Amino acid sequence: MTYKIFLSIFFLLPNFLFAAGSNGYQFNFYYVIPFIGILLSIAIFPLINEHFWHNNFGKISAFWALLFSVPFVINAGLTQSMHYFAHAIFLEYIPFIVLLFALFTISGGILVNGNFVGTPKFNFILLLIGTSLA
Picture 1 (spheres, rainbow, N blue to C red):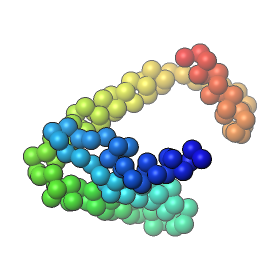
Picture 2: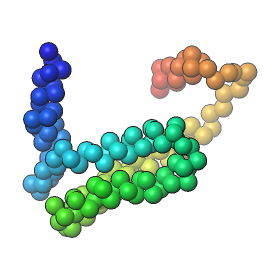
Picture 3: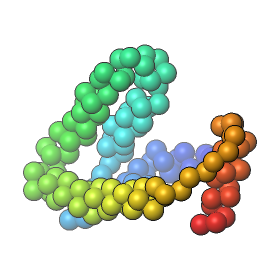
């Protein structure tokens, strides 16, 4: 019963589920399609044809980015598009890269020696120990 309520909300009120942009621009449901497309591309292309994916992943990513960007620039305007792009770069992407750099730096000195075999059970136990220590 609850899934019927979720599906009706999902299809009838897409703007309710997806965040409205600042400055009054409303993202509708269709802007999710390129995101789903790139996720499926990342998940499926390497399984279907690994060589094609490794040679063309930049072109495939650019295709999905253009599929989002062109309608967004047309509908929202260049000024607002540049605002969202700058917001994504300076307030989301760069802090994420700094975080990854910090995590890489502090974990770079950790060395675990032993005769370990990378099984799912061992990996889970190792992650569990690391999580509990953190």
